Amino acid sequence: MTSFNYRETINNIPHKPGVYQYWDAKNNLIYIGKAKDLKNRINSYFVNDLNLNTKTRVLVKKIHKITFTIVDTEIDAWLLENSLIKKHQPRYNVMLKDDKTYPWIVIKNEPFPRIFWTRKIIKDGSKYYGPYASVSMMHAILGVIKELFPLRTCNLRLSEENILKGKFKVCLEYQIGNCMGPCENLQSEEDYMANIEQIHNILEGKIAVVLNRLKQDLEVSVENLRFEDAQRIKQKLELLSNYQSKSTVVNTSLSNLDVFSIASEQELAFVNFLKVMNGTIIQTQTMEIKKRLDESDEELLALAIPELRNRFESDSREIIVPFKLEIENTEDLKFTIPKQGDKKKLLELSQKNVMYFKKEKLEQYEKLNPESRTNRILEKMQKDLRMNQLPQYIECFDNSNFQGKYPVSAIVVFKDARPSKKDYRHFNVKTVEGPDDFKTMEEAVYRRYKRLLAEEQPLPQLVVIDGGKGQLSSAMKSLKKLGIEKEVTIIGIAKRLEEIYYPGDQFPLYLDKKSETLRIIQQLRDEAHRFGITFHRNQRSRKTFQTELTLIPGIGKMSAEKLLQTFKSVKRIRESSEDDLLKVLNRGQVEKLLHFFNEQKSQQQ
Image (cartoon, rainbow, N blue to C red):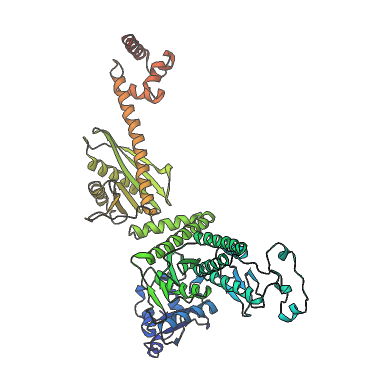
């Protein structure tokens, strides 16, 4: 377990919300966690280590000291945990991807404020909007603002004193209409700041407020017969309406919401964040998290939410999440798990985004690390099929016959989730009379694994039987005869509904139709069917031709087999010269064979 006496420590820990820290023998901080009840949470690490995963057991063995901080509420614990993890970055806490490279839009704190984008935040009273995960989206917003409002782009110090002294001259930006010339007092600060106020509204998602203001200005201009001003305002309205139509608009009654969803894999997790203001999604970001202790989705999401809210400076009081978190609603914060309606649609949109992001990231990673894709698929199959080992070696059986004749069985082999064609095998069934698929399967499985055992070859971790309960039961009989029924996992797949059956289980397992596990099983089944049908057709054709040849007087089964092995078909035998035929048959047999073919030819004429 651990070398320090945790019982003495646990006695001093209260039943209160807070944050706990684990330290190793060298006094390094190795883990930070939050708890609704500190005593119960910390105690859970030590009282029953059988419930812990391997990584957590390693962590517990390294604990030599526990410290904690009591707070008033769960929300406080949640926020404190996040800030401490960011500050100390303990070894066993998840890693959150940094946000230093994301750009912001800044409205500078200065006379006649400039507006531009930056990657560096300076605490000088300026207002920052962002960060923007999409640089193209940020530039689109800046482009709209530039077309709507003529603003200065120079870095002159436009104090009232400097302007009145006439220190500045208008530049080309004024001449082409991009600036109203505040440097020469051609635009008042009051008028300039009115534009800045509307820009604040746009960046905060309050586009409807700006639209209403422009409509009022349009009416005033028309009433006062200022038609040139009215035309300019009308163009602004059209531009802003067009920009709004390209934004993701939801129910306008939904204001100031945060939406979160998560998708996770074995080592990684991805959290998507949507910021909704006045019915419009104004920000979106997906965070990548590297797991350290096989954390649950609930734990990861609870960690990512305060990080993203802090990053985007969100003050939303309602947070939409896909499942219940160990954080209770308070007066300042409410967690909602929507079941229907617009909030449910928002959550579904967030989930689509996070799944797409996960797919893209995994594909990129797996192109650089092909073995990681194999491991991921095998681990997924192990989990989906409830196996106790990775299915690195899989075999699949399929039977074929024609009206009960020429029964054959085919075996295909997958290694590391890919076909291993050199290991494919097929059987001519020897002990089954008539169309008995169950007996055929029993013979094929028995012969296959009897031989592997005799040759001391490794057994597959997974055996797939093409068929339902009957075929699976027959295959299981053979495994029991050989005494290996507990050494391999065996399943059957029924075609009609793609049901997965287990021996002795009355009810089938239904896998997600889009799951990689089902896709691999279907690929095995289809490959076994293709391989089996090809072999069966060859055998049926061969035996049909062999039967035809044995009708010729003087040509027995052995002679017919030799002819087919040499010439491959009856057509080629018919077209062969006497000298070629003499290499296989004696002269008497060749004469009878040629006489038979000549008679056939004359009858057809």
